[in-house]
Image 1 (spheres, helix red, strand yellow):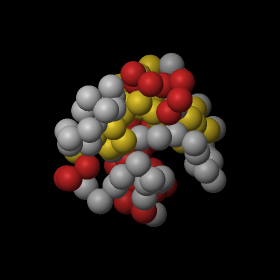
Image 2 (image 1 turned 135 degrees about the vertical axis):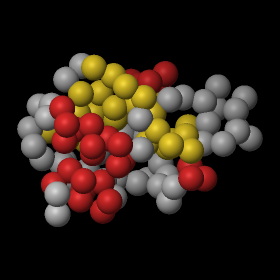
Image 3 (image 1 turned 180 degrees about the vertical axis):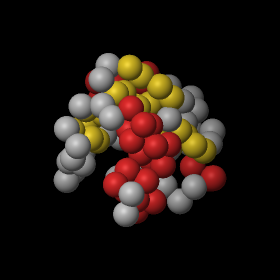
Image 4 (image 1 turned 90 degrees about the vertical axis):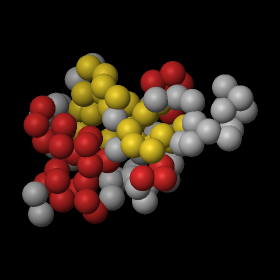
Length: 103
C-alpha cells in the first residue's frame, strides 16, 4: 500500500488533539498507531498518568490512518503533515505536553 500511495500527502498523528482527548477522558492507558497496520505501528503513549520516556509507535502514512486508542476505544487523530511541524519522529511535542499537564 505504501508504494501505491508514495506520491500522496502524509497524514501524521495530531499530538495536540490526543493531549486534549486524554485530558478529557482520563484513561488508564492510551496508545497511538496506524489503524490499518496497528500490529507494526501501535504502542503506548500514556500509562496511568505518565508519559513513557520512549515509544516505538510509527505515526505517519500516506495510506493508513493515525489513531488514538484509549481504554480500548479507537478514534482518528491526525492532521496533514504539510499543516504542522510534526512528522513520524515526533513524540510528545511541547505544545501537547502543555495541554496535558497544564504547564
